[in-house]
Image (cartoon, rainbow, N blue to C red; front, side, top):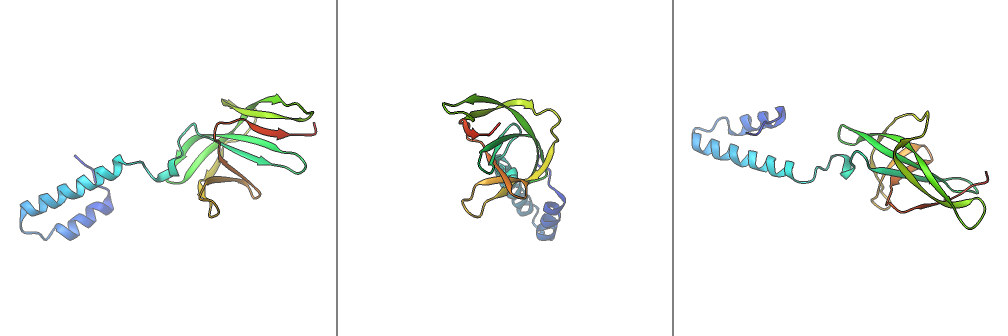
Length: 152
């Protein structure tokens, strides 16, 4: 049995409620229920494919490349997520103050706050991102080590 929300119930009653043929009414209701089930079974467009446990990364800095990773801890509504900054495993490179880094999933930076962010779609390349602060955006991490540089 399919449970309809208030809007769907109203629409059905309004469009089919005056139907004198009960068989036709039941067929139409079955058709609507089938369509709703089919839509529900398809990939849910809410959260734009983002799931709890997904990792987003930032790359920012002036004269150095800082990398931060954030893990999705909760999905809220259709386009909002909670994220928290992850600790990193840094591996020094061949040159001083450079290397590659990867996140340590489930291990959060001590004292980091859980951030409530809206998932957005870029008008430039169509990719997903969340705005961390006005000039820093996090994008989904592809799983490969990220290059960093620093002065300290």
